[in-house]
Length: 52
Image (cartoon, rainbow, N blue to C red; front, side, top):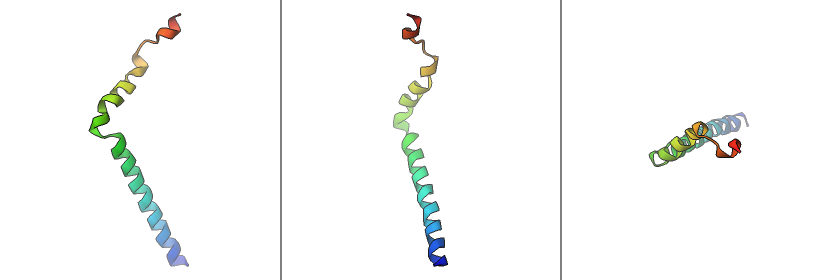
């Protein structure tokens, strides 16, 4: 039973490592660079609805 638990603990860590790496790669891929730069500069743009 203890051997089975240590196996699942190792698989759990490996699964989350792969999941985190996949999300990181998917988010930071070069094709999304322009979209992320636009979203990052959104805070510095004037909001016309607040001026009314």
